[in-house]
Length: 237
Picture 1 (spheres, helix red, strand yellow):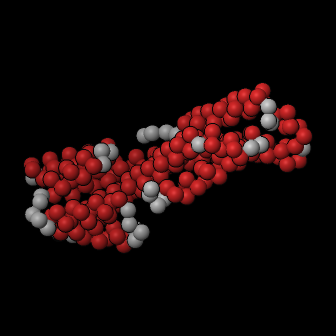
Picture 2 (cartoon, rainbow, N blue to C red):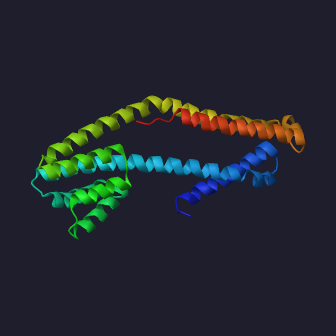
């Protein structure tokens, strides 16, 4: 199990225990709710992957700008890779996928592998549109003798526009995302409030077949509404 997934697992188990108590008044029901732990872990993995991809896009764009600056200063392509890697490490001291990739590419470059080959392999590992476009144009300019610096600057400009558009959409959706999170918590919060303040109103829901069925249906509707609401505030550019 990955280190970062362990806290998510603990949170998922805690949520299952809370739902077992709220909806069924029995912690034994947690055993029947364990399959939902897979759904929780999947959502957490998706959220981590999206965060890592956004960080990768940001680092990739900054690397392109640093590479362009190094080429403008008169570095060869091979030396510009090394210089941009060192500067990127200073900008992102915590590291990331992009710095790890550059470290690997520099190690292979030391074995006389060409930058075009290294970038083509890099694009295969990260098949994002920005990466593929940059690598294709870079390799074409390298083989045809075009201006690498102009190519890199143009690519960086296009990526900046895409990231700015994405940021504007995120700003517009921020209020909706906040509302979706509140609406996700509210049903469980209301049930908790009633359970603590007026528990006798829920006595008919617990420890009988009909109440168990009703609670299960409500829980399914609750989870379905959560997933639907989350999908509605997601977007792709």
